Length: 119
Image (cartoon, rainbow, N blue to C red; front, side):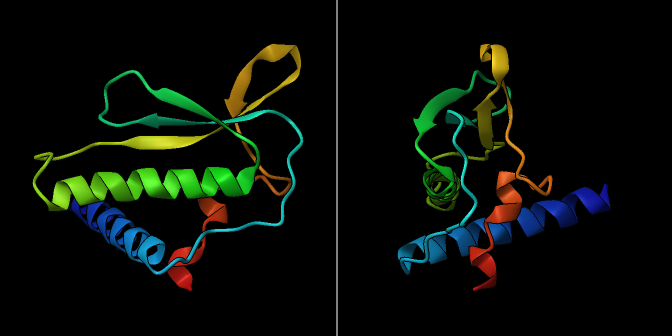
């Protein structure tokens, strides 16, 4: 149980840094190119149905995911939501039209591409 609180603390700190970075104009970027169709998914409160937003590239996905996470953190900090349990990610359309979680050429996830908190 203690590990869960530690992890939650890390996630909340990351959300604060995400929000601060967006306010400072630090926008996550990557040089990785993806030619297949992409869409961001976001669960504003788990469990619920996600919503999807098509994006043109990985940089748009990074920005949108950061903004959504920061918005949820803002709502929590201003007592708009009493708590939250959100989740999001990036999907890619594969052969046959199915969608699956995106992975980069080295097996990295979209979260691993976002290093703005280290800037």
